[in-house]
Image (cartoon, rainbow, N blue to C red):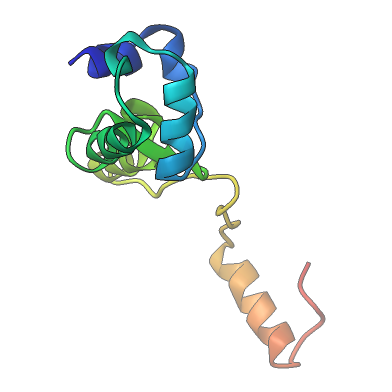
Length: 116
């Protein structure tokens, strides 16, 4: 619960930890957080795994571990609820109009000048 409270608000909301479970655990262990005091690195690794997979305290975003509220899973869930596509800049593709698609198809088939 202390971990949930820590990552649930304040400056921790902006934290970006290394993406791997071990690297994330190492970074957290070196942060000297009170709720991890006295834990060995193996225990912290296990805590990180549980925080991601079962407790929804942490999640992944762009290869990093972030607070769950900023994770890709939450973004996808919110987009699904709004019935909208996930809008991520690195994966975004321009949407062509039907006429643009026809022009490009004609260009591909060699039936018209190339599309823009």
